[in-house]
Image 1: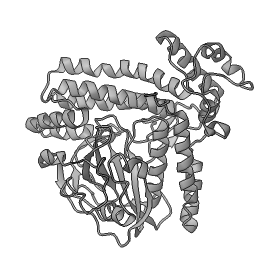
Image 2: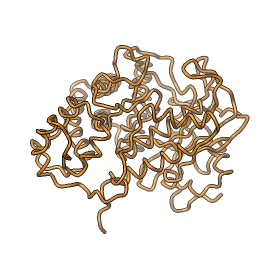
Image 3: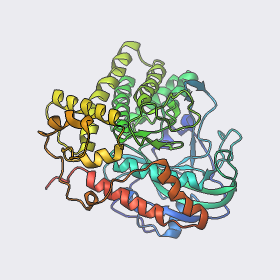
Image 4: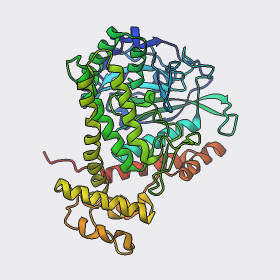
Length: 458
């Protein structure tokens, strides 16, 4: 097998905790396996980019075990709050984790699926994924990666040849199996299940496992874990806001304890700064609306703190939980300055700039993507109305984070609004034409290169 000898470093760490964390399962036997998308850029981080298409399908569509890693797929067990209602009847219902490896940057990464068949937690579901759902996942993860949001990556989409019936899109519709590359699949809900079952031994083992394999620390201190999770998830919330992104379903079983976003269902990017903008049609109360996301994620982290009370005292957990707010306040300033393409100055000055920017964005109701595009590097162009007058003087002293020398700046801003997503799906559904999708991915990656921090000189 032509795996990259320099980059392929398999792991089977999950087997150390699988006895209480997961169940062995089998993938569905699909009628077809038609490769539609392979992310070789992400695959290069774990040594899989050298696989032939046939080998790729065998391992990421038929799920033949990769050498040296997990012996087979595992469906994760967890509980969680769904729209603030506790549910003990959860778990991976149409996915599993089937491989672990150490990436080129030293992080533990896992390969997990969506649409790979039924598991003990399917709850009357068919365990499948629509092809449209897979396409939407590609678009979400590519855009978020380009916008500096910690996210899983869509590694593979393989069409599986089944006709699926869904109530929220035209049926029958085409099916697919997706593989995501993620920095772990341990959720806050994983800890909630152990607390619910009063499994102190399992809780201690899971704390040590996460700290060792996902934070690189030899410790079993639950307060240390909560400290790290609070900081990582606060940073995630800030970057959601800077991106104008609405996840849609921020339940505690959808919050990864590594602070990496994953599992994209009814996501949306907001066209303008509307605090009440929601992604899910069923979120009628606006619980996970754009402006409520930081509070929603913090609430989920509070559930982790509550779960860790099984093995820790309250006072140090409360203190650690308090880091969410302070971390978020610093992270939102950092994230918006990054998107504006300017180098931070002094903390008070930076906060004033960000507050003025947010106010102008809200009152003007200008396109979020257009504004960030036009202001990148620190100048408010002529033609911006009086809403932006207060920002002009504040931003003038800021040095550009990087020059506007990429070809991206000669065109139009990239966005990922719902109408664009539907337009990309239409030719796939109508005539199996994938050109718009592949072109969009290339343009989004070009945007990411234009926004990225400059590579430091050796």
